[in-house]
View 1 (cartoon, rainbow, N blue to C red):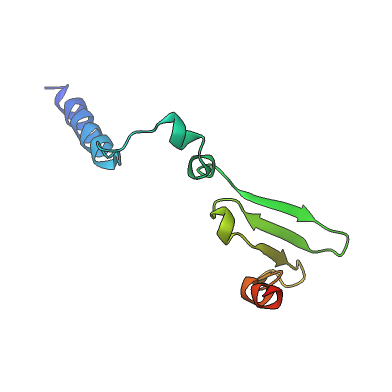
View 2 (tube, helix red, strand yellow; view 1 turned 90 degrees about the vertical axis):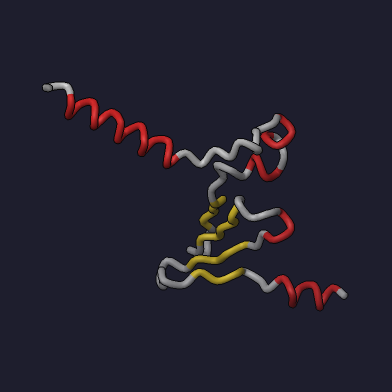
Length: 95
């Protein structure tokens, strides 16, 4: 009788563990995917660089290469992060 609470706890932990598992049986990790751009970006974080003008420039490395943009952060107004340039305007000026 003393083992019943521990057995119930064990069963509940197993149910919790398997319900949290997000492993889709049809998907496997291959070496090709692991070394692809998508695979490399799994653990990626922002690249950051402080400049002499006291601004922090950020680039989100999780975003696909073609969609990345450089963000400008002013520490004097921490609620605002703005793009360094607008990609559409740059493309229009180049065309």
